[in-house]
Image 1 (cartoon, rainbow, N blue to C red):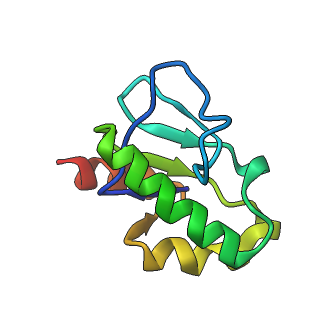
Image 2: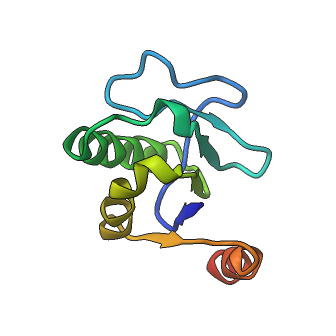
Image 3: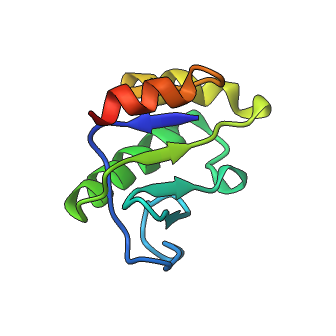
Length: 103
């Protein structure tokens, strides 16, 4: 999973479907956003554009974090997420990284 320091937003319990260039996601119970990995764009360029738009939108909404799970078949998207200042979080270190990041 990847957690962003600078992102956030959505209306609680409301999917982001239909929002232009915003990744399909829902708000979590901690004021963050969880992105649905099954609906990520198929190309690196489309993912980069959508992720950039999503981070901007969520930041404007005041979201505290973004959880982005990238599936094995989507590994080419990892460098894009990292270039956008997202933290790579792999279990079991994941919880420690998240706690350090949020403090």
